[in-house]
Length: 84
Image (spheres, rainbow, N blue to C red):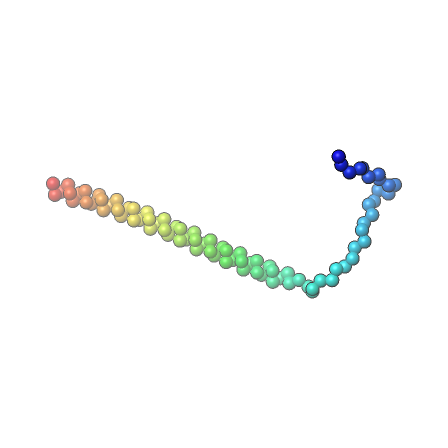
């Protein structure tokens, strides 16, 4: 069903594998990645702020338009009542 159990030896400390150094392409530019991440965050924050302001402005203008329409209907009804 499964693999056989391993028998523990007398030593309680496991043997670590030998490690070797893998040559890289050079030092990593950690600072530039951080600066780039900050830039992306700032652009995202500015975009969200612009969207929030535009949405608030749209709702405000829609409410003003609805209020003006209600007021116009009320004035038309008053004018009609006075004519009668």
